[in-house]
Each structure stands twice: as C-alpha cells, then as structure tokens.
Length: 157
Image (cartoon, rainbow, N blue to C red):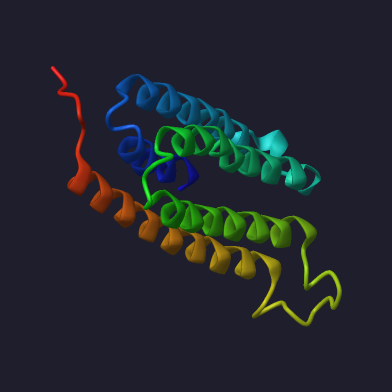
C-alpha cells in the first residue's frame, strides 16, 4: 500500500516533468521491492526483528519527504499546494503514529490480557492505516482536480 500510494501523487505533481516522475517512481519501487524481499525472508520474520521491519516501512514513508519538498518548490505559486500538503502530512502522521503503536505494543504492554480481543496495538495500527488511506485519497482527488483545471504548459511527444 505504501509503494502504490506514492504513484498517483508523483504522477500528478510531476505530470509536466516526466523525468522526475520516472526517477521518483523508480526510487519508491526499488525501496518497496527491497522491503518485500526482506519481509519474505524467514530469518527476519521473528519477533526479534519487529523494530527492523517497522523501520523499513517508516523509511519508505519518509522517502516521500524528498518529492514533497521538490513539489513545494516546483508549485510554490499554486494556492492549492497547502491544502494538498496538509492532507499528505495528516496521512504521514497517521501512518507513523500507527507504526509507533505497532512497535511499542501499547496498550497491551501496559495491561497484559486486557486488549486480547479489542484495542490491541495491531488493531490500532490498522485503524490508523485506514485513516491515512482516506486522507491520501482526499489529497489525490485535490491533485486530480488541480491537474484537470491547470494542465501542462508543454506538450509531450
């Protein structure tokens, strides 16, 4: 989900800059493939590497800082930039806070047995991922409307 969530944003923000589109798409795809291969490794699937797996997901998410800063400079005069950026920041915070719950195993760590059925860290993580996905969807709709109304000044051949 993290890998594919980058694709619409990069596509729409860098629609008029296809070389940047390609570079950022290759970057996140490469990081994603490395993460998938790592996660499928039986030796890294133990509880001992829980924090390492979470760090891989966080690093993929934090990869978005680079194209985001680039997009802000590229679209500095666009008044819609701040609204879309706010949605993307909300998405990132939702994912990061969810990962924090997952790694720290809060609240079941504080009260073992109380959260076995409802309210444990893995459920909280998934709820925050859904919240992040919804804010990401809203940001994508804003970018789509922006590109539909603005278009590109250049033509592609």
